[in-house]
Image (tube, rainbow, N blue to C red; front, top):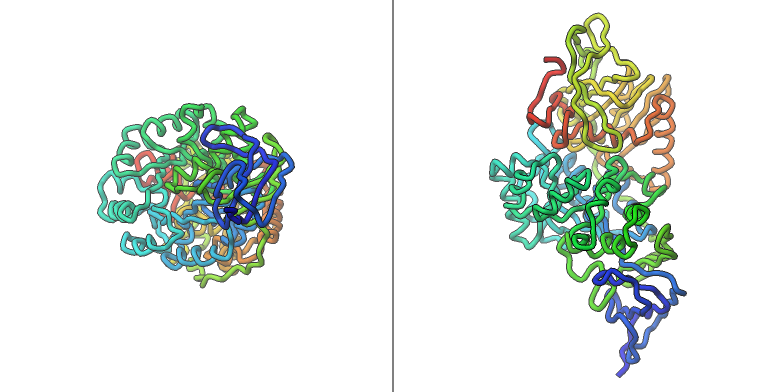
Amino acid sequence: MTKNVTWHIINAKILDVFNLEFEETELWIDQTKIVYRGKRSDFQAINTYDAQGQYIVPGLIDAHVHVESSLLAPSEFSKLVLPHGITRIFADPHEIASVSGVSGIQYMLEEARQSPLHIHYMLPSSVPATPFEHAGATLHADALKPFYSVPEVNGLAEVMDFPAVFNEDDDMHQKIIDAQSAGKHVDGHASGLSRQQLAIYRKYGIDTDHESENAAQALERLSAGFSVFVREGTVERDEAAILPAINAANQSHFSFATDDKTANDIQREGSIDFNVRLAIQNGMDPAMAFTLSSYNAAQAQHLQYVGALTDGFVADLVVIDQLEDFTVKRTMIDGNWYVQPETTVTPLANQSLNFTLSRSDIALPINPNKPAHVISIMPHHITTQHVIENVPSSSGYFTPNESYAKIIVAERYHNLGNGIGIIKGFNLKSGAIASTIAHDSHNLIIAGTNDDDIIKAADTLREIGGGQVVVSDGQITILPLAIGGLMSDQPFADVIKANQLLQDAFAKISDINYDPFLTLSFMALPVIPSLKITDQGLFDFNSFSFIKVQD
């Protein structure tokens, strides 16, 4: 008896993720699922797709990403990444949750439903990330628990508050228990953790990590039983250093993630497709690289029947022209060839910025006879170096120059004050940059060379309700971010154009070759080594305590 199916794909070289090889074979697809791999005489297809000898791989999966870092709403983010062959992502809405709490999570869920992209959400585990900063919301276990009944929710997102886990904080442990009791799993965030500390995470069932910066760290996590997400984002350029750790024996424990990547970079170089190209360029077998980007990611995130092109698996696939420097020709998602849908970004009730910042607030007294604690940027990484150096001063106050800038984080929700410090690595010749994206609490963060431009940048962001700004020679360039001061409500192409104008304005006052705004945003994240700044002051990761600019 003949069975009718939706699609018959012929003349294709199809990836077998279980044997790490390409096979000249066929696929039979009915509705959303692959029903058979190989030749069948008892199937009849409504539609036939002739791949004409091209390669077909499973839909690419981003194992860990913050959509907000693209500056796009989920529906616009989807339009940007789907043509790159990305069919599924695991997103942590930590950023909008830190601003708007439960309503922010609900917004991300509902806004994403306009798109065919499979968006799985991992519930934010640490809002706020630590008690050392003020956020717009506090999410306890009881606020998160109801979300586990939502189909799109896949688990608990990166647990970044190691002291809370180690000290058996009741609320943190309840969050972990609730996720596991609901049949979900828990992602980790093990930046700066020792092998002994990794064991604490594993004790409580935390089973993934995306914070490896090199092969040694990746292998240490592997030996502790973690699945390792190999990260390559806009700032976090870790992949090339991790790749030597991956071989045929251990490859199943590795997958790819972008974590934080701007829309500009996704358009310019790609998303997970860029991770795959980079792996192949560095000598990885293409079959292995595409397996990391699909089946391995699904397994790490505890998804069944996803990420392979054989019987019973979801019909998410990508047609590519060649294996090395490939181009995505077509993308199928849930058994349908992707065509960009008409969508409209839905708004989120935005709260006004509530802060005041005066010249007296940002004055930084300095003893010229003593060295100061300085945040030193590590290009293409979100970690920093803690350096102690003599800094320029005049009349007893810090005076920025091209090497040293002033950095301020101002609490933006309840006008609770600001922290102030010194940073090197932005190479600012003049002016200031500022943003309401400051991981993870997203207070106002500013780096500048003079108080007038710093105040002007702050005032501008208050007036537009959040976003990013460059002040240069009296000129103000802005990118408004109407959704919580984190995401734009505009189409992705318009956001990319506006962001490029912002980058061009910054290039007039600095010669650095890495993204200034994403770099700036991570200067406020105290759970990442080594020296950071929050609205409460200068924070030393190694002692996990605040320190003064000068001892």
